[in-house]
Image (cartoon, rainbow, N blue to C red; front, side, top):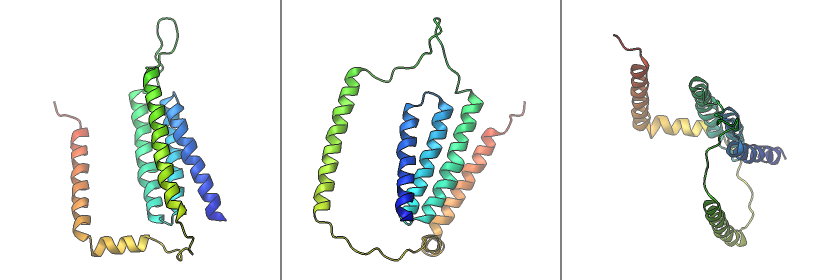
Length: 175
């Protein structure tokens, strides 16, 4: 019962947040709606039993990327509304009627193909019992520190190099 409620709340957050990101005219509001979308994706990971991915989603994307975007928007003044000489807000055009018609027909075609594939798959579906819930953190940690230790160490050195490079670029120049 809890998984169903979590799934519906998470799916509502993902669909509603993504829709509002697309429809929002204010860049700050779009960034906040993106945060809701990423929280919903973390909830969907939890319903799948991937608790490590849910935690990584919250820490990396919701905690890092969105905050970085908010700082970038605030520092560059990205929320400024531009007005023309008549006092009307200028919104850049995103396409013509022709592009919207082509996009709509493409979406209908792709949706039809995907629904046909899903219908064919679901025709032969047999419901079985779910396996016992197991945490993924221990298995991922054990795998990273035994079988994939070389890749883990190489990625840590690469991230250290990126951090040092970012510090060198952001450092004030000596005159």
